[in-house]
Amino acid sequence: MKVPACRQILFETARRILQEAAFAFTDDPEDSGREPGGAFMACSVAFNGPFHGAMALASGERLASILAANMLGVDEDDPDADRKKADALGEILNMICGNALPEIAGTRAEFAITAPEPLSEPQFETMLSNVPEHKLHTADIVVEGFDAFLVLILDREDAQAL
Amino acid sequence: MGFNILIVDDSEIIRSMIARTVRMAGVPVDKLLTAGNGAEALQLLNSNWVDLVFADINMPVMDGVQMIERMHEHEVLCNVPVVVISTEGSETKIEKLHQKGVVAFFRKPFTPEMIRGAIVEVLGEWDEGSGLPTDSF
Image (cartoon, rainbow over all chains, first blue to last red; front, side, top):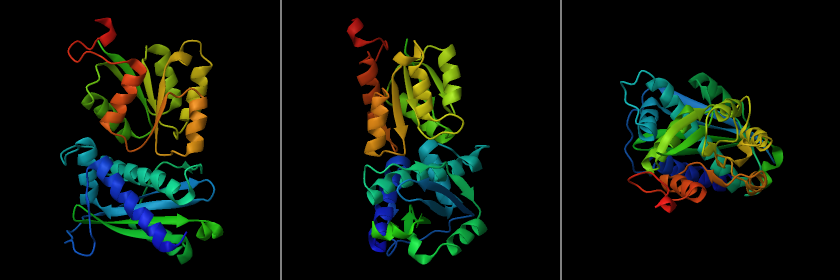
């Protein structure tokens, strides 16, 4: 699949999932003001099927906090707030991955997707730096005024031809 | 009086979201049980009457497909309807799940209308006031 098409699928799928699952709305990155996002948070899932790879989502904790609040009604005073923010980010990623793969590989292609795993900032950066450019597809998303970064790694040479 | 509903998902956030959606949908609930995988779900099914199961597919220890297969081997549990709510929704997988007796499949994200619709389809309408099935009036 060509890079612009893949990026568009990532962006459109993320936009829909964020809206439907977390009532969070995306803005045009070109003309929206950005707010400081707080501490770095990221998570990843791996998938295996007609091709394999991984998807990762990074944001600041303020966006994760909004997602958790909208998905579960979690407040900052909740003693489990940190874990629930990470869970919310992970589940949003899981849903984006599950909904984007059929757009990329077709609706009959079966994939197994692993449970979301948290990533530290160095782990996230290492993951990006270790992937050849032609396997890496990314989308910058502004959600509720905060930056988020979605990454898809298609780990098979002929995935480019999809 | 209400339904006993079992929610099976390894994600606590998804279990909570489904539970909240069931309540928002106005479903009369007696017991809302939750399990983190298929094995935990089977234990609950063996010790509680359950009217409907909402289950994920990919879970550690025992996945949703294994759980459904084990339910089908059981003379009572084989009659408990299962609705699958999963992130993975290939047509091939949905066909296989229907062959295994799954009554409905939803891909996440889900809406209260989907959950309510599945419950109405499987368990029938209920009276909003009493929670009794409408065909009992």
